Every structure is written in C-alpha cells, then in structure tokens.
Image 1 (tube, one colour):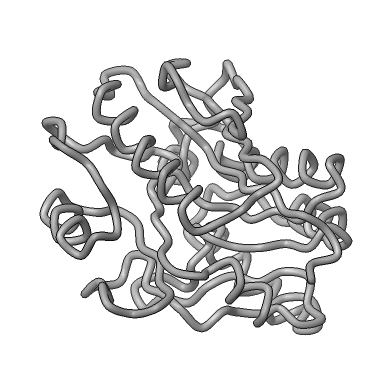
Image 2 (image 1 turned 180 degrees about the horizontal axis):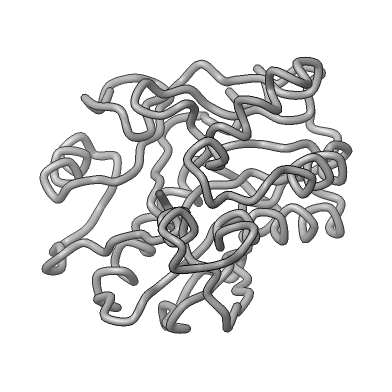
Length: 244
C-alpha cells in the first residue's frame, strides 16, 4: 500500500510551425494510455510554447500554462538559449513541487512516452527504500522520460538537481546528471528493470514496457496488438522539442 497517492506529470510543448492537429492527436493517445494503466490522484500537464492545447481532456487533467520557452537541451548546447536548465527540467521541478503540495508522489511520464502493463506497480515494487527510481536504455546513459519520486524525497531531489551545473555542455545533459546522482547517492536513487525507451526493437508482448519517439509504422503495430486505439493517423507526427 502506497503511503501517498501519486500524481502523473508531463509537458505539452509546441513550437511555431508545429502541426497542432497531430500533436493533439498524439496527446489523445498519451492520455488514454495513461488512464488505462494508471490510477493517479490527478494528471498535471505543463503547457508551454505556442499555447495550443487539446480542446477537451479528461476531468483528472489539470493544465498549467507556461508562456515562456526555455528551449530543449539542443538549444542550450548550441547557445540558442542562454539558460541554466532547459524547459523539460523546469517543468518536472514544478511538477514535483505540485505533487509535494498535494501530499503525493510524482510519476513523470514524458510527452511522447507510452507505457504498457502494470508499470506503476513495477516501479513501486522495485523502488524499495529508495526515494527515486528511473530506467535503463542502451542508446542513452539512462531513461529519464519515465520515473517515480516519493513524496518524502521531492525536496531533496529538487535541491540536489538545482545544485548541478548549467546544461550547456554535453557532459551536463539530464541523463548524465541522473546517472551521477545515482552514483553519488546510491541509497536514494535506483533503476527499474523494464524498458525500452528509445531502444529498439519494441517488446510488444512483454508484460511491462515503455517507449518513446514512435514512428507511424510502430504505432500501427501497437494498435494491431490491441494496446492502443485510433481510427486515422494525421499526416506528420509532431517533433517533441522537450526531448533531446
């Protein structure tokens, strides 16, 4: 039994020129996927960029408007944005404190990530006495697009991350920071054992898995497996700029 209910948090970032219809379409998949496999206290979505949001969403969903655009990690690495943290980091810190104020744990589920099976139960089962659990993948240092932080550890997580350097060099991207925090604080940080995030192939028949950055062909295959439902795919899937 969890000591606290949990909130699921995410972003909904659009850029000028993004196809609003395809972005809203994928958000519909994300929301249905979230509600199918999880039972959150609430869902909070940080809406930044162009301010486009789907017209109607589930009553559990609370939208938090952000009028600015801190950019993604590539903007900081190239110097196009001069900030300490990119938008995705600012988003999850705000979401973490919203969860803390609600006396809830936080599950962060990125804008373009779908997760299947009892992944919530798996993270709670595997986190043990740790405060934070995140994932593994081969093509990146870690999976930081789906993670869980306990309510009691939220202030310390935010404090530790705020104390890290600017993310304007390749050695300071968020995935590497999570790995370093795990190494420096093994009593607090741990990994779950399911995948695959950006790795391929997709494990369609695995009981618990998650992935992001889907191609149209992959979404059609997932639909054939009965894991998602949709009628017609819009032309052109969106580019999710909160991801590296």
